[in-house]
Amino acid sequence: MTLKIYGPTYSVAVRRVAVVCKELNVPYELIPVDIVKGEHKQAAHLARQPFGVVPSIDDDGFELFESRAIARYVVAKYGKGSSLVPDSNDIAATAKFEQAVSIENNNFDSTAGQIFVEVIIKPMRGGQTDQAVLTQLLATMGGKLDVYEKILSKQKYMAGDTVTIADLFHLPWLYALTEKAKLDLVPSRPNVSRWYNDISSRPTWQAVKDGA
Ligand SMILES: N[C@@H](CCC(=O)N[C@@H](CS)C(=O)NCC(=O)O)C(=O)O
Image (tube, rainbow, N blue to C red; front, side, top):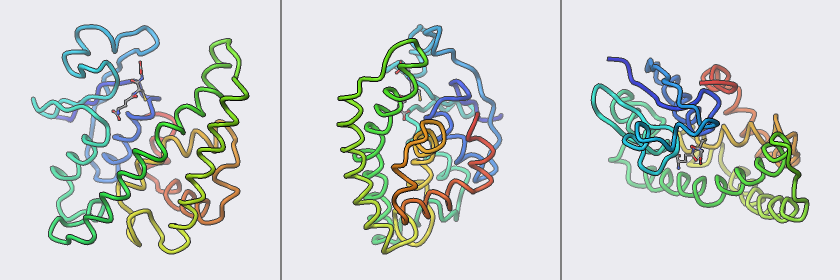
């Protein structure tokens, strides 16, 4: 049975899963959940994702939520031998990979999402960007990306010289900030820019960047 992904095609977290499926040629069926109409807070979806966010998956009866956990499940189940996650017997590579996964989750994801809300979502819904909040968020993100710039001046990718899902996890927000919000957070940093151009030019991302 085809892997089912529940969530809207444009969702950042849905596309985080979809790009990894594409990397491994894992077919999936996208089952829409309309988050504008609030379907993600209704009983049917809460049974799949009790926190009321998307995505969740059903893989032949096996259910899971949290996009990064889903991506890791997909690699573990369908990507045997894939270098997108290091071999667990390689303790050093695995530790560096876990470090990169944590960096994305703790130093990037939340601030990137908040910036996108200020620049794109609020005006789209008829509201206004809070300039003071945005200035603070941009300073925070800039500081974090300065650290990325240092890391990426010494290695090609966030976990070393091999691309992993830790890199791919960044793609939806990097794309949103750079190509939708038109911010210069990425282009102004040569190594971050080189890294972003590298990972975003993968055909798998190109296939899902505007919809899973
Ligand atoms: N940590 C979760 C975050 C999921 C998430 O925030 N999804 C967004 C869409 S990209 C959502 O459901 N937003 C609706 C809401 O928060 O009400 C994951 O990675 O799966």
